[in-house]
Amino acid sequence: MDMKTQGMPLDGLLTVDRDRLWNSLMEQGKIGETDKGGLNRQALTDLDRQVRELFISWGKEAGCEVSIDQIGNIFVRRPGVDNSLPPVMTGSHIDTQPTGGKFDGCFGVMAGLESIRRMNDLGIKTQAPVEVVAWTNEEGCRFPPCMMGSGVFTGEFELEPTLAIRDAEGISVGEALTKIGFAGEKPVPGHPVGAYFEAHIEQGPVLEDAEKTIGVVIGALGQKWFDLSIQGVESHAGPTPMSLRHDAGLVAAELITFVNRTALEHAPHGRGTVGCLDLFPGSRNVIPGQVNMTVDFRHLEADALDAMVNGLKAKIAELEALHGVQVSLTPTADFAPLYFADNCVSYVRDAAAGLGYGHMDIVSGAGHDAIFLAEKAPAGMIFVPCEGGISHNEMERADADDLAAGASVLLNALVNAAGIEEAK
Ligand SMILES: [Zn+2]
Image 1 (cartoon, helix red, strand yellow):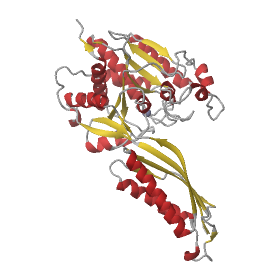
Image 2 (tube, protein in one colour):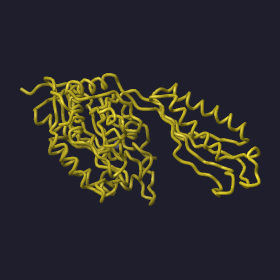
Image 3 (cartoon, helix red, strand yellow):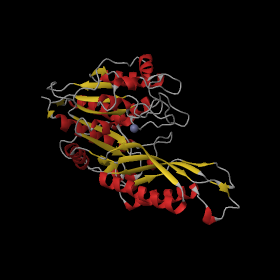
Image 4 (cartoon, helix red, strand yellow):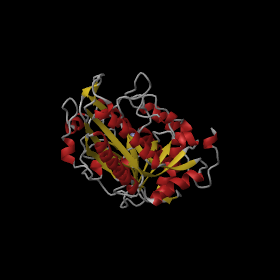
């Protein structure tokens, strides 16, 4: 056991079976395994079918009822004492990126399953049912958008248009669901949820850097994305003096550094990224006449996010005047910042503290199914470190002790939220 996870659990706190969790993760990780030890298991492929069937068989072995909804989300339900109560839910996704790892998403589903197995071991009865969900197509790489299953479950996306979305080969979501036998009947939007928890690898370097085992996720960064097009004048690099240019490339460079500086000025939660940049005509002795680029701004506070965007607009106006160019700024995505429910955050923080795990409050910079679920029910997330903060990569790695710690926090949060009745 490493320094991070040292500590004795307080009375009444539960821990999962570390090896059983790890073995389940490794076993599901054989389905679609790549040469480099990652996974290529894209949504609604035959490999996705295989891991879905494995998950269902494990759920049934744990004595749970299994149901599938119209977008293929799988619900594994452990009955409670009072089954008229909405279930306390946990889950994540088992589809991956083409060069994905074995932990992104899969950890959350396997941690939920391990929580149920542990409740069985200990004869725990919860008041409300506990449900483990595998959401369809969280990654969105074969069929955009991402978080498709949780989006349809929560009513964020409508069923029919979603079923009609096609992949690069022209196969629709509806056709793919039918082909793998997962076009379920349970209606969407789905049933009420008492509370939702999701355990996930951090996919960033913060926990590892701070040497903490558990990230208590307090919220998710809001996001504003833009396409930006700069219109200058292409001209010969030799005969055109510096003072008489309308250099779209130079304006792009100024904007890249401005985006970076703006995010730094809004620390610690500001993020600013220019991820795409195309210069035209792309000739070494021609001044760029046009640039197409993207801007991705994120922040935990709506006001700060607005201030970052307003700063960009002011900078654009200044650069247009200075360089005689025209800039168009087109919004392409807009997600409001999110704060998870206080009671769910407390369940997570109290469990981490009680179990003696090093923990810290953290924000999610990425999208997760929990973000849609938070619209429907009180929700919270648990992060554990991943090696080097690397994810969406075959080299993705996580430590078995850290994963067990995250799953133990999840187990306590689920039991507390569902209400416990000790076995006689
Ligand atoms: Zn994920």
